[in-house]
Every structure is written in C-alpha cells, then in structure tokens.
Image (tube, rainbow, N blue to C red; front, side, top):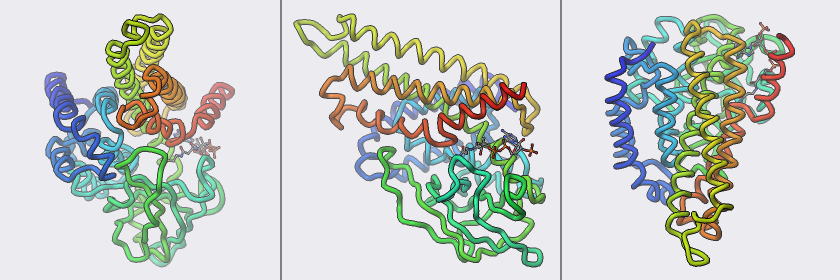
Length: 385
Ligand code: COS
C-alpha cells in the first residue's frame, strides 16, 4: 500500500503548510488551554489526517509506512499534542483492526476512524501490567455469545476523546496466549473514566484510566473473531507504532536543532554571536550527526517494513524497529538537553520552546515500550539467531 508519488508530494506540502501556518502559531494557545482548539481538529479531519494509514478502500489515504514516517517527521516540528489528537486513529487504535480484523469489522470501523468521526484508543497497559504486558489482569468471562469484562486500564491516550477502544483482556489462562483483543464502544454500560492524568509535559494530550465494571461485549467484537491471539495483535501494532514514534522523535530533534541554531546566531556574548564559539558548534554538530543517524534508521526500517507481507510479523523487522525506537528516542533526549544548554538560562524559561520540548520528548523513551524493553527485544532476537 502506498500513495502515488505525485499525490504524496502534494499531501506532504499541504501538511507542511498547515504546520507552519496553523499549528506553530497555535502552540502557545495549546499550552494555555491544555487542549487542541476545535477548529484545528476540524481542519485535521478535512485534510484526512485521521486516516493517513488506512487503505483507500476503507476511506483513508493509504500511505505506506515510509510515507507515514515522512509525514510524522514533519508533524514533529510542532507541539506534540497536535499529532496526538489523531495519533491513535493512525496507529495503535486502528491498526489491530486493519491487520487482524474480520472484513465486517474493517467495514464497520475503519471508515469512521479514517474520517475522524470515531476516535479510537488502544488499551493495553494496566496498573500492574506495563512493561510486562502479557501479565495483564483485565478479565473477560464468557456469558453466552457475550463476554463480561472487568478491570482497569491505565495511561490510556485519548481515552477522554475516544468513541471506542481496542482493548486487551484475558479470555483464557495465564500468559500471552490467554489474551484477546476486543473492539469496545466507549458508551458501553459499565465503562467509566478516571480523572485526567497530570503529566510532566505534553499539555493538550489527554490520558486517563479506563475502568470496566461488568461491561457486556458481544463475542463478535473480538478482533478477527479468534480468542487467544490478542497479544500478538498488540505486539504487531506496537512494532509499527515504534517506527512511527521514531520518525516523530527525528522531527522533534530537527525542530530543536533549528531553534538552537537560530538562537546561537542571534544571542551575543563576549562581543559576538554564541554560534561563533566552538563549544556551541560542537553541541550543534553532535545533534545534527545523531539526527542524521536516526533518520537513516527510520528510512531503512520503514522500507523493510513496507517490503514484508502486510499485517504479518517479521522478527528481524521487529528487532530493527526496536533498535530504531531505542536510538531515536534516546537521541532526541540528548538533542533536547543540548538545545536547552545552548539557550543557557533562557532554555529554562517557558517562553522559549526548548523548555517545553525538553519535557515533551521525555515520554518517548517510556511509551510504546521503554528503552529497556527495546533492549530486551533486540537481545532476544540476536540470541535466537
Ligand atoms: N509480533 C508478533 N508476535 C509477537 C511479537 C511481535 N512483535 N512479539 C512477541 N510475539 C509473540 C511471540 O512469538 C509469542 O508467541 P508464541 O507463544 O506463539 O511463540 C507471544 O507473542 C509471546 O511473546 P513473548 O514470549 O516474547 O512475550 P513476553 O511476555 O516475554 O514479552 C515483551 C514480550 C516484553 C516484548 C512485551 O511484553 C512488550 O513489548 N512489552 C512492552 C509493552 C509496551 O510496549 N507497552 C506500551 C503500551 S502502549 S503505549
């Protein structure tokens, strides 16, 4: 799946224009109101951003992974929360349905997800199951042709905006093989939301607990109609998500470097711009070289992702996605730290964006698998080989 080159270059140009003309000027409003203004969300829907990764036959734009990474790289140039509004529709919320869903599930949900009419969240993490996702405790007990689901999901991105969840629950015994993925409408009786999480950064993104008390869901809502394979669906979704996050990290690194270069040219100390000093130049050069390495990994890995059969997992590509996620998210942490350093005292002041991005990028090393989980995945594959 890919959009033809000409249409893609038009789409990319219009996304870049939207970022420069609409999103960057709204960054401070976003920070103040802790939300994405409704007119911006409407424009995102209009542009098709909620459906970039969904095939045209289901109402989306049908970008390849490589094309999606290019667009997400561009979106990294502005406040994190803008992309987050449609991020779960593009990635972790929708892709399980696309990869493993029945044709009926795809027809029912994907067009609404692609248009943004339905916001969909991914609910895997729990209070006692984070890195060890296979130990999740949310239970789905059979009840005729339904399941009754009880449990709590934690840190669920876009839960307050969601019209549905793809949610992993235990239909069988212990371990990964007892887990199934369900599609659950958010207005199903028994679902309630916790209070909004107060976070280190990422203002404008919405996360909270999702509590399920005797939630009755048809067995037909199991993704693909097959119980016991939900953990594999989740892992395939995360492989893809890790590449998406890597591209985002590179975009954010480029924005940070651009801002730091700008500041280094303007700010004068000891009678000249600080950019004339070699110690500042070294920080800029290290950041640029690391960004180049990260972006090269993203492009290579995305090409390999596109080359494998769609919806199938390839352990080598999964391993490379973990390498890419580990490197790019750690890289942007170092780049953000240097950007603050180049700004000096101003880097600690909220008026300058380095302070905000510094806090925002910290999450990238944690979600969709911590750096330490990526290390485990990489090492496991190497030792298996
Ligand atoms: N694609 C497809 N299948 C996969 C897979 C992948 N990328 N990774 C694992 N699987 C399969 C395995 O092949 C195995 O199936 P079989 O039993 O048929 O062989 C099954 O899933 C269980 O895998 P494994 O034994 O590797 O599971 P573990 O419990 O050891 O742990 C990790 C797997 C740690 C990698 C997993 O729990 C993980 O990614 N944790 C982080 C979770 C995360 O990213 N959370 C973020 C929340 S979303 S923001």
